[in-house]
Amino acid sequence: QVQLVESGGGLVQPGGSLRLSCAASGIAFDSYAMFWYRQAPGKEREFVASIISTSTITDYDDSVKGRFTISRDNSKSMLFLQMTSLKPEDTAVYYCSTSTHEATYWGQGTQVTVSS
Image (cartoon, helix red, strand yellow):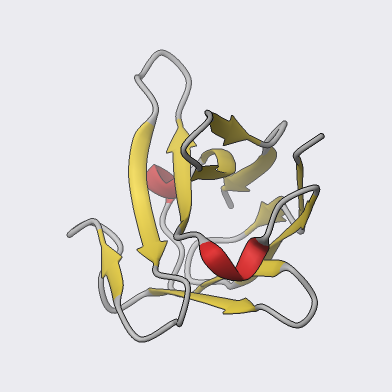
């Protein structure tokens, strides 16, 4: 059974930083690309960042380029999202995700709130 469990969200002031984590289990973690998505209230879920299995290629939505960094530790089946220079518009529930040949999997999400 594939499980993705996010953590690290919270309340932060504008300009602050947070590091999100996603613990994966039940999957050959080092075989698959991993993704971060987010969903703000009243909006659709949107792509934030991705990283391939070998960590050699990453991709970011334009809105977070230069501020967010995605990384992974295949030895620990962990995915990370380092977020800096946070803005109020980054407020959302953040989800990690992956897709295998069988299905697409999502975590339960972690809330990030950027407010003064």
